[in-house]
Image (cartoon, rainbow, N blue to C red):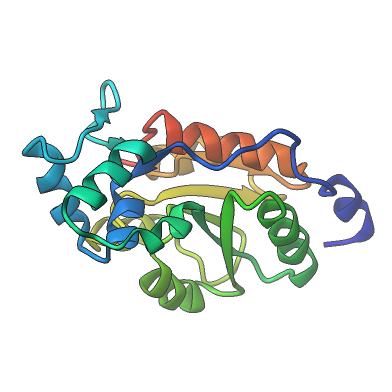
Length: 209
């Protein structure tokens, strides 16, 4: 990324706060269990929360998770993992660095960076991000295959995909959304635009299905 783009990706949006509502994937990570275990807790009524209208996605308020953990003797140390996991896939170190610094500044996001689809696969398996921001212009990124791979992995099936690119046409952008991406941003963009899109796709249950 050149200096012009770095100047546009400057500061995180003001007023962000730690998420009061968590996804099943986040709860699974906090409690060190599989996402399907969290779903069973939810469906049985042991863990209270709600479903996103028109979606199968579940959301669990932090206070309800804390209550559940105390009632079942689960250590609450893991609540520090409540920050939203984001994986950035881009081969421009400057771009990734500015995004990472801005997103992590407020404590709402934990960020990992990969410079190839191969490395992204490894990091996704290790960290189970809630959101994957990927430059779909990378030579080794196959958008359709990426969606298929994620949906076939139980640990990553709820992850939201956000595509970024400075080269894609409007028609190509629409194709990405149809293939399963939850959102798209054209480079260059401001960090607050990415933050707003992350908030949108994780809060309203936008599903890549």
